[in-house]
Amino acid sequence: MKLTMLGSGAADGIPAFYSETRVSKHARLHRGKDVRSRPAAIVDDVLKIDLGPDTWYQLMREGLDARDWIAVMITHSDDDHFSIDELQYAVFPFNDMEFFGFPIYGNQPVCRRIIERYPAWPFEVQVTKSFQTFEVAEYKVTPVEANHKRDEDSHNFIIDDGKSVCLYATDTGYWFDTTWDFLTGIKLDCLVLECSEGFNPTPYNGHLDANEFLAVVDRLRRMGTIKERTRVITTHHSHNGEGTHDELTQFFCSYGIEVGYDGLTVEF
Image (cartoon, rainbow, N blue to C red; front, side, top):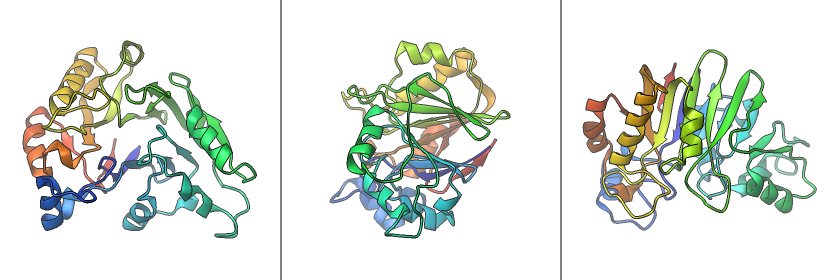
């Protein structure tokens, strides 16, 4: 399996809009891996995870084509993960397609918003629920419940192609017992996990800081869900987390954890 991190930032990206934080100023000056677009990923160039406001830019940067997608899977309804206006450009009158060429998978609020916004448009939407597996071509995808938006069933995705297993987990918070129990017995080849709060923890429990990230990884290791050769990668970094790419790398490297960045591609 191949996974490309199209965006590794949080909701306002790095450098952030209107921001004079140290991390934003550093990114404007140094660019490179410190510039982070809104969160998204793609598996094997065909299985798209989230559809944020930076999708067009991300595809052009990586030389990818949305016409190759076989499905779009939305984790939850926050704007940085689900930019509903982007859907209209897939079909007539913006181009010659009369039917959206792949299904959209999302929780109830996501699907309801699509149907309400485009009641007569040719979209196939499939409602997803945590812990209920669905299949897309050779992939088995299982949403697991994230501790993020309490007014909807927010998802992290386990993706299994029969050879490798990946857990893509943005906006997780510290998981509920139901998710921890479900992950017991799962063996991961790759874990992509959010670290939004970095070195600046807040009272909000819907995101992880760096030490909470380590606590999650340690528990997964003790459970056997993370193996010795499992790739563990950070994502969803906020400028308010007070960590540049190099500073995050220095912190995480001794734990065998990779700091993700826009355009990082891993195969496992």
